Image 1 (spheres, rainbow over the protein chains, first blue to last red):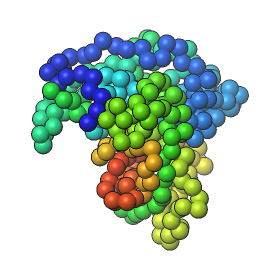
Image 2: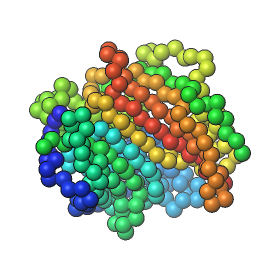
Image 3: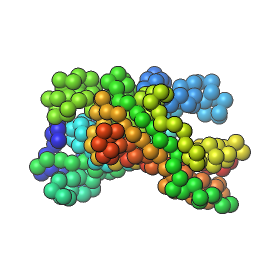
Image 4: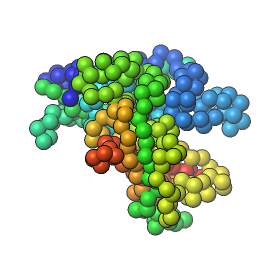
Length: 143
Length: 165
């Protein structure tokens, strides 16, 4: 395993880490870049007139873009290559100008098959505290 | 209204997917990860990886980049496409299609240079009534295996929802 950034002993069950602003003000160019990088060219995410024709005020972000940014907050904290599981549920759209803030909470610490594991709740909320993507993750952490 | 449960268990796809350095670096940038581990083979080695690893959600887009046509297995009779046949048919009548949930189970990190064999299958198909609307869910599971060893690398579960108008 690799790139250890946090120690198992430092994680406390029930503790929420300080929120981290991953993106200060998300915008259309972020979604253009994600569309190109992912192959998701759904016009709802990048085309102003298509979004408006569909009755929306503007394009909104790909759910998987937000999920990718949430995952970045996990590898930032635990190191790359330590996730064993990651699951996301798409709750609410992300609109232009919003902040994308990662909030992580340790749900459980345990040892399984000789490996130290931590189960987390991890979410992205906007600057109003509205939940946009709700997630769970399991990471392997050295002592 | 009933949904056709006979889709459950049927294969939706088989693929061979190549993992390359450019798409991985570009994707890392798109999801706001600046780590040199995704960009520099030396940094990847220092971090303990044999080759550059891919970010956690890259598996969801790997096929977009790495399914080269001449490398794909021949199409098979009997493969199901519930996205078109079930969700697509519902969407033509109205309503909206949403990505409900996505799950990744990591058996080992995806690495640049991997050739992965993918197989998708339908694992669930169900309906729910919610606030006067009918929600139809299709859940597929895709497993990517290392082509050389056939050991699993990544399992993904994709939950697509149609909500009636």
